[in-house]
Length: 141
Image (cartoon, rainbow, N blue to C red; front, top):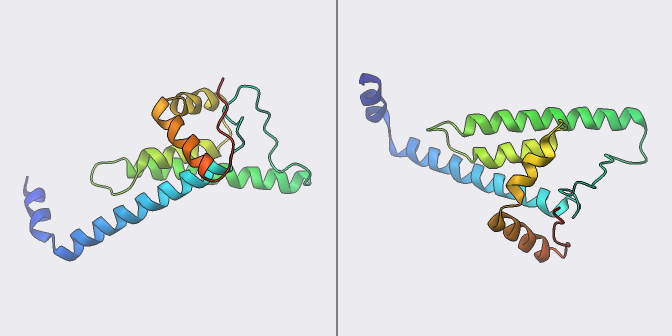
């Protein structure tokens, strides 16, 4: 319990405002990233009939390099989301984990993503966002 008392004694208004600022910036960045991804993905991305072809028309070296970089970035986002999910760490962990999950290529990720997206409130919010940018609504199976 002494460490808790020392922690509270060491707090200053600058540290509190800095923590709140980091939280607000990370929240805005998470929402921006999720918004961009949800607007840019094809409308049938969550359909079981979706055939993924990452960077069609490019050479296999460029394609595999991009796939590897995308997966490394996705794993980084998942790890960052796990850290942001810890108590006392400012940020939106669940949103960051979802964004990382969308980026990586692992078997079985589609049903997990679809379960999250199929929730009526989430699907409605995403389709409203897509409509605002003149994109068709997501097609769900």
